[in-house]
Amino acid sequence: MEPQLTKYVNTVKMEEMPPDAPETSKGPKTFSVEDAVETIGFGRFHIMLFLIMGSTGIAEAMEIMLLAVISSSIRCEWHLQSWQVALVTMMVFFGYMIFSIVLGLLADRYGRLKILTLSFLWGAYFSLLTSFAPTYAWFVFLRCMVGCGVSGHSQGLIIKTEFLPKNFRGYMLPLSQFVPESARYNVSVGKDQAAMETLGRIAKINRSKMPEGRIHEPVAENLGSFMDLLDPKYRRTSLQIWVIWLGIAFAYYGVILASSELLENNLLCGTGPVQGSISVEKGEGPCHCNMLSTSDYHTMIISTIGEIALNPFNILGINLIGRRWTLGITMTTTGVFFLLLIICLSRTGLIAILFCLRALVSANFNTIYIYTAEVYPTVMRAIGMGTSGSLCRIGAMAAPFIAQVLLSASIIGGLCLFAGVCFVCALSAFTLPIETKGRALQQVK
Image (cartoon, rainbow, N blue to C red):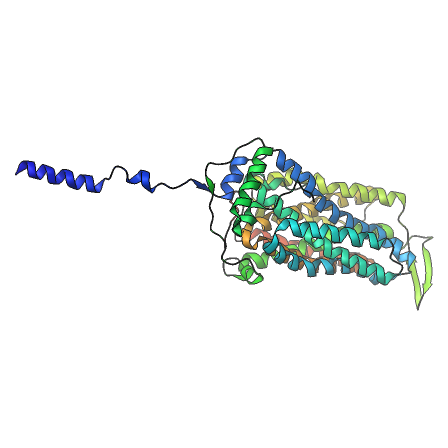
């Protein structure tokens, strides 16, 4: 009996622990795009990408500075009233608003790089035509068309976000054959081989290596749509983001246009238009236009430098205390500095306040761009950015009428309105439900 029992026990053990089972069940190694990006790390490719894609921010910044500086010229050229000058800026943002959502949807379906290239060509073409605008009406129309082109530039930031390791996304602050299509986008639509080729190229440029195996991630069944932004998982985040985007744009473009208005009409300490201003009879009343002086241009240039002054501290805050707290603090401080403009200031004091304001409003935009690009998954990232960028233009469209019309009638009223909006945005930032600091980019919904 004992030999039979031993044989039975040995048979049971062999059936429970087949020696070759683990070897035969193993398949080929796989990795995600996030794994590849983290393995490749930060290197020469990303520096090159920053330099190339930084032109997207330059193009938009030049557009806004042009509107601020040229306001006095077109006022005199076509004998315009304040509301007509403000209408020019409003129509630029109207074009931006309409096309942001459209281009965001197209980017999620056809790729970020195609839409970015198209927007560059569109904006350049209509910017050139604006130089030959024969009348005020043509000028307004052509600037609106430029706004339509500028609306696609947010795809440049999405490309940078999707190629960066998570610990380096805070450094996005600062088209050509050298810029590849997003690997995350390719994977989301089932183009794994194209994604492998892109990542392999980046690894070669960075003198790094790829993970072993092949990419394997689930293909999105449905691409992103506007209704996905209102899904219960993202509804509160989307609504609060939209409020913040609207307020940030209102403050950002408001301070740029307000600085030009304060200098052009000499509104310091409550004084009116300077003596010797040009008065042109047009229609039922005179149109006063004051050309900016050399010292005014110096003031605007110095204040513009402020847009990069806060970047090191902004990067530090984003990476240490997170996106929500960094944005809440800078938005609160922005509101405080708007209120400081109410105080009677010397030219030096005005330069200092405008310098700080430009630094703060730029930091606000940098942070919300990064947060929005990180909070949504790949399949709805472009529509999320496009919708946010579109809605924020409502604030941008309102800014010229406050900065260039209301401010001339009531400095206190205009500045308090700007400050109040900043405080509301700060509260919304502090209470955002999702913190994206250190979080991997989501691939699917």
